[in-house]
Image (cartoon, rainbow, N blue to C red; front, side, top):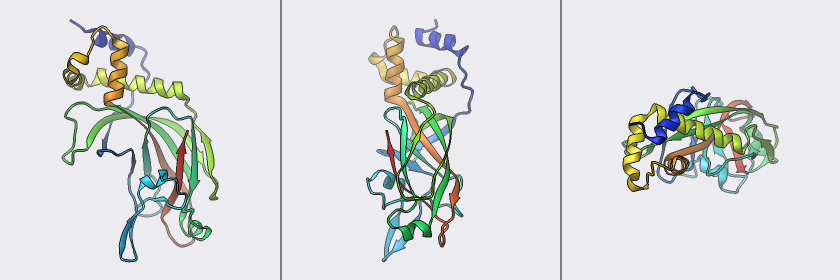
Length: 237
């Protein structure tokens, strides 16, 4: 016998436009922002890492600096979202001083995308990182100006559109990953209510879901001395 949630998913599948490939994403305990690389250097006999958490410390002078070879084209930052975001404010470069700003690369253009995905009981790595299966939706690009003042950007997908994307990925996950769905149902136990399809979809999103914004470096303004690309601060609204 087909349960009500599975039946709902089969009916919805005919109108689902989402056919993207699943990607793997791992999240460490307590983390909410991730970078594909970060620069580490020795300053005064002390090791300093310019990690992505600096983007949200309220200090324009403490940047994230990518740590890849060359200018960092293709490096990215992924930010966990607790709710949809309509606007971003960004401070470009190493904004501690005009000298440091010009010595290092600044971002010229970013590619933006939205990630949505889900996990299930037992989906962890050897390092105890939570593993998610995610799908990605492009949100276009952002051409940044070469200065230290805050810059604003409105996302092209509004709150409703972001919520609909999250819903689509959930339905695709439950349809494509039937084995993981069974694991979720078993862990929910008595919390799983067969008759309450909307409530169950929201519960699975809340307990097992992942919604994030990804920014990928596409081009840079070159620094006069260093080939490290810096971002100073991000505010999400």
